[in-house]
Amino acid sequence: MKHRSLLMSGLILGLALCAAPIPAHAGASFDFLFSMGRVSNDRQIFLNVAVSNYGYDRVELEPVLPRLQYVDADLPVVLFLAHECGRPPGYIVDLRARGLAWSVIFTRVGVRPDVLFYGIDRDPGPPYGHAYGYWRKDPRGVRLSDNDIAGLVQVQIGARAARLAPYEIARGRGRGERVEYMVAEKRGRPYRGDRDRGRDDGRRGGNDDRRGKGGLKEHGHGHGNDHDHGHDHGHEHDHDG
Image (cartoon, rainbow, N blue to C red):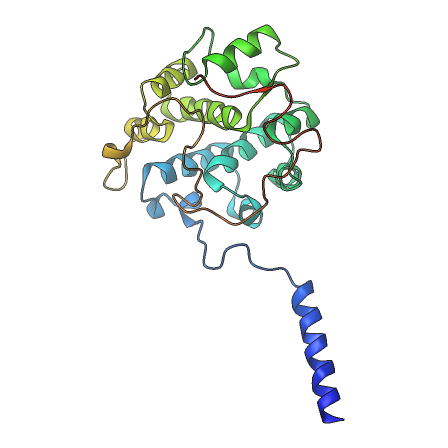
């Protein structure tokens, strides 16, 4: 009888654990998003400035962060798109968590790709020249890749943060300068800088290593299908080759 009672207790405990939410990443800290004093590198200052510029407070934003697979790549798009469509960040995260590509989410919330090219009035060259060309040919129907969208959002946010024209930020990417590096150079660093790590080959549109939390990959949704052919499928176009 005692054995049966222990078995039932174990079963109830097991069911309770299955029903309870599992922390996305134990010990993950997003303090740097809300306090400049906790910023320690260029990537973190870029994300901090993005959060500050869009005016979201910690209470609203922090609960949805563990649901993003890559905080540094996805959070700027969430903030940008939430602002453009007038929806809360949690609504955008819900769509992304379902595995939808960014291009599909843009369509779902009624935001046209034009906003990604604001201030880019001519071909900026790599890494966004192809995306710019496809958009010019088919402004309404173009479906850009996740990486292009993440990169172009960075350009728009970076231009505002650094008080530079979006075209100049895009051209800087072509010279191998990361957007977060350009922002930190303009705004100043509250830490000993990343100047030696501010450059890459300039051929990729978004975050090359796609790591969150200022350098660490965060647990979250996988890149499943977008219910309309996958994140980077369909009539989507990637970077200049």
